[in-house]
Length: 401
Image 1 (tube, rainbow, N blue to C red):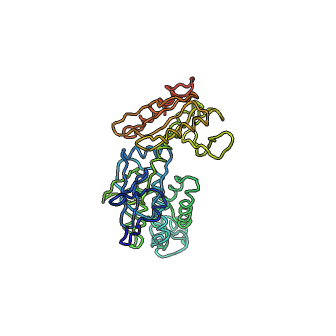
Image 2: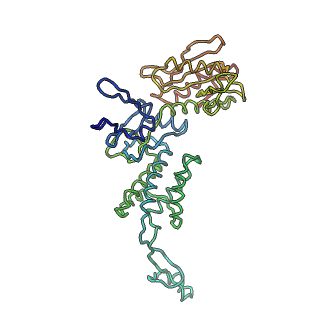
Image 3: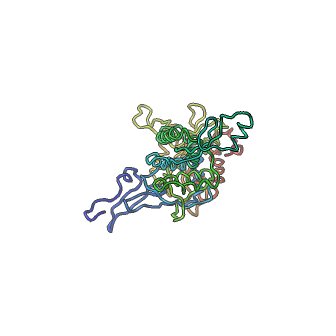
């Protein structure tokens, strides 16, 4: 708050619904709603929210479930360098962020040598002229070295190669339209430039660029270097880290997509589909569609036979409302079972816990997933445990991820 009692929290941060403010007796409690990353709070305060599990497990969940995150404002932060690979879509967002600045400021133009064969131009390369023309009885044509002023400089060649590489990485979806447009504009601008993959020495070419444009080129080269080397980043601040735009990850979304995609891949050979209820909605009541059901996971065989449902909750404790939610969805779908998925808290082991059985015969469970240890072993164990709930005839031991 300022001295007039007005909030200083950035309106963009409020629109994200990323935080929750609660009045208490001696001030305000701030709760970050399942997010990690750099969150700009005010013009002078940025929250560095780190996960309670290893950063490499976050990368694994992003890659398995599909990378989903948002760039927050124009805030730039230095991230700690790690040995783990960074998701490539994050680097693509970063590259396009700096590419937008480079297009606005303009690319570096400089003098560069070019060999011209044929008619005379100063300066003549006598050795090449004699060997190529005079020695073969051609007294007219020459080989000349000329200097041209344009974009075909060594650093622009590397930048064009980077644009072509990131163009192949960017997904063909609507939310990447702006990035595709930026890269297309850059490639049109550099159409007369001959792209060249960089060597180790090329990543210091920004030192030869004019001071006005140097920061843009430096950022483009650093992000491209991270892509080529697979260098990772963590959320811990370090003065000598890498500068990237700030990103926020919603762990509720990341965890849900990770769980769903794990079962999609594992159960496909058994001809069991695992669907997203937000896209394949059901109905809570038979006689109207006023209240749709949107379970996070739908285990389905064929087009109509719903075997079970799942709800994913990224929270330390399952509440009564969560149990009522899965019960109502399972009852409406006439499914055989329902499972609540949540991360295992510190000190808890991964496993399946039976909640109870309804009069309809439907059974309900709570499954805790250990995302603090070996994420791939936890994933395989989860598939094996849940597969045992599927109808007879499904070989749980034959299912793998």
